Structure formats: structure tokens, C-alpha cells
Image: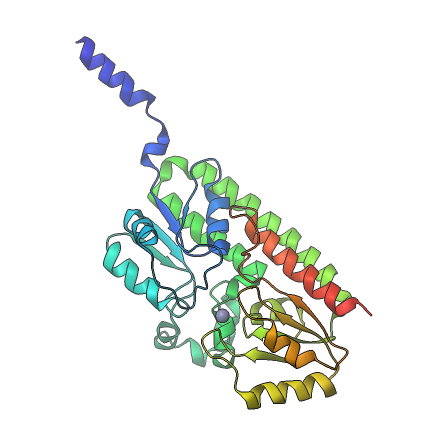
Length: 305
Ligand SMILES: [Zn+2]
């Protein structure tokens, strides 16, 4: 009898955390949004180390274990991370897998390509045209997309862990309000430099550019996977010389050599944009800080002189 009541007592005193699903996220920005929704309940695991590029990655044993342990995986999607698609299938076949940017092929099957009006309504699903295909994969650079993803994350967690639903709902709501404020703040930051010419390292910023109505004059390389040709660099240099390009942006993972070649002997300046937030501590604050940094870095480089 005593043992039985002791057992009951143990059961009753067990924290709700025992029922919280083990959650993993692929990259810093997604992890940050998940951490925002889970704040006060649990901390999600981060699969990729902050400095790693999500475009191509060889999984380390510890990262494989993180996937294996996960009951829920939030990730960008198979077009950005085909390697992760395979890994989830092999290591966590029963996990609840939530791809935030559906594969382009699925898009096509769904007939979205013929209906641009419908696509425009689907903010947050990374809906951009094929000629901006790579930028579509970096959809988190639009804070309104991040806001939509907060809802996807909340819905998933509420369904799997209804016990903590009230917390997930409140966190997501607070996160959405934060991102609306951030969107308004970035509007103010970029307003004075709208129209100024710049070149980015790779074609990742389309979502940000579209949201804030600025436009790069070009990208040094279309994606991380395709290094530029000599002819491509020469053509870009012509534009930097002729086209009133104020700033050429590099990224932390890539050599600054190409950027130097481009701006040598011109008036153009350079600065580092960090679309993954590799230099920011991981957690719920990473996502808004990443976008804030991006806007400020762009604006200060474009404003000077
Ligand atoms: Zn990219």
C-alpha cells in the first residue's frame, strides 16, 4: 500500500516536460523560431553547427544522433537540404517531419505555377517564381515569412503536445508581434538607401529584397554550389564600374578575394552579410537579430560617403 501511494506520488510529481516531444531544427534561423514557440517548455536541438552551410553538408555522428533522437524535425525543406531529406528518412522515419519550404516539384504538381494570384496569397510558403528559385530557399529573410512559420510551428506543437498548448499559443502570438515590430523597424532602416545599387555574394536575398522593396544589381554567384565563371566576374565588374554600385556584400563563409577583385579601383565599398546568423548566439533571439543586423549592415554600407 505504501509503495503504491509512493508510486502514485511520483507519477503526480512528474513534470509535464516528460510528455514534451523531442524537437530538432536544421539551421539557426529555424531553430530560433522553434525556440521562440517552445520558450519555457523546452529547448529544441540544433542539427547543423552554426557555421555550416545548409546547401551541402556531410553529417557528423553527433548530428546523426540528434536526428535519430528527434520526434519532430522542423527544417527548410528538400530543395535546400537534400542531404537532410535522406537523413530524416533513414534515421528518423517515424519522426514528424515539417518542411517549411515545400519542394518545388510538389508546388508544380499542385498547379501553383499557373495561378500567381493564389501564390501571392501564400506568404510564408516561400512562393517565388522559378527565376528566383534559389532565393526561395532562403525565405526566412522575409520576417513576414518567419511570422507565418511561427504559426506552422505552433500548430504542430499544439497537436503533438496539447498539455502545453497555452504556452505555445502565447509564445507564438508574442513572437508574431515582435516580428511585426521588426518589419516596421527594418522599413525605417532601409528607407534612406532604397534605390542605391549593390551586389550580393549569392542569390539568397530575394525574400528580403521583395519585402523591403530594394533590389540587388547582381550576385557574384547564383548559389553556393556554383562558383562564378571568369566571364561572370568580368561582367559583374563592368556593372560595378558603370552601374553606380555603392556596395558589394560578402558572406562569412566565403573568401573575400572575389569581392576585392570586383571593387578594386572603384569607389564601391564592401561589408559582410550573414544570412544564417552564424555570428549570433543560438536561441530565440537569433532570428530577429539576424534580420536586424542584415538591414543595419546593408544600410550603413549603402549610406556612407
Ligand atoms: Zn543559398
